Length: 492
Image (cartoon, rainbow, N blue to C red):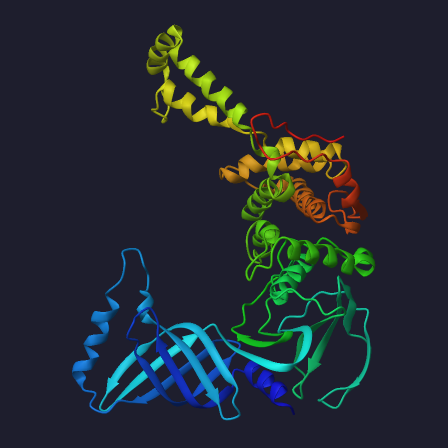
């Protein structure tokens, strides 16, 4: 068994122990940093990440030193949770020269006679190295099964003594990547999933792991995160072992299922991945996925919060990316609105109306008529509403009237907490939610220019549907940036 295989098996079983000839912890945020150093063992497991208890010799240490640490911890700026000088960088060196690091840990320090006992833990630990050969590839190891199309035929003897021949994995071309997903078994019969991507042209985003993770979270509607990421980018190599974040499938179903996924899964994944890469090589979420990721994380949520998040996702997508200019007003537009408000407030009749309003209002809102109008007028300063953008997209063939209507009927009740799912109308409300989910996916398809099949949950029976994002974009004239005379775009 290779060192990599042994480490992964032990890590998944929560039994990985890495003996280090030197563990060094260096204080951050100070000109005279404290450095603790000793030999020790890092304990790693998918359930807890990384933890360690380190005994550091400290000749002359006494009980008086124990009282110095709490005083140091109380220092810091107002509003700062943990001062920077309470963080320590980790560098752990194995016997074979492998180095494991973490950028910022906090320590639990206990003073013993002639030694300090340090305790620390972290969600992840990383190994970064430089090598001579060049490679461009990424491998992600999962505990959950990814719901990818099973199109890979395997013929293998398994560690438990059984033999399997059949479809058990997935393979396809994702942009410039040859991608393979396999399940790796161990003697106990348990398995892990490994997603491997290799660049065919020697080009790879530096954060390719982040781009692939969010691509498959979107395409499968399961927020599965790997427990291990391995990236080869030129001569740069990195391995990240991290605590497992359990993922659950909820009411939100993926954009493709059945025959649609079998035929077009990698087309959708390619479109989403390439758009995420073009939007910027972010270590965290890409801007587009940030608008929709929350809808996949409600495995045990009730219907009402899911409806709210779906409606919010529509609102965000209708004002994101290339559509953002449609809700922005020109400087001239805003000036007209400001002048209109001033003219109204200066009108001689307004004072008399304001007095009548003070006598007439009986509700909880005690604001004056002027205060209410001042709060209302900013709505006129917008270039357009999300609903206006959706109507333009409907004319371009990107969304449907039924999907817009379902969103419009649920967005306000779900946002204000006065929408209740009733037994006699449950199926009607559920159908509306799936229309809104389809609307969310259509908006993403438009943004990424996806061309291919999807599962149309806006229609009865959820039949396969076709979407041509390039054609919709071609029929849609995007506005120029807001200016003094900037017009609002419209479909041709």
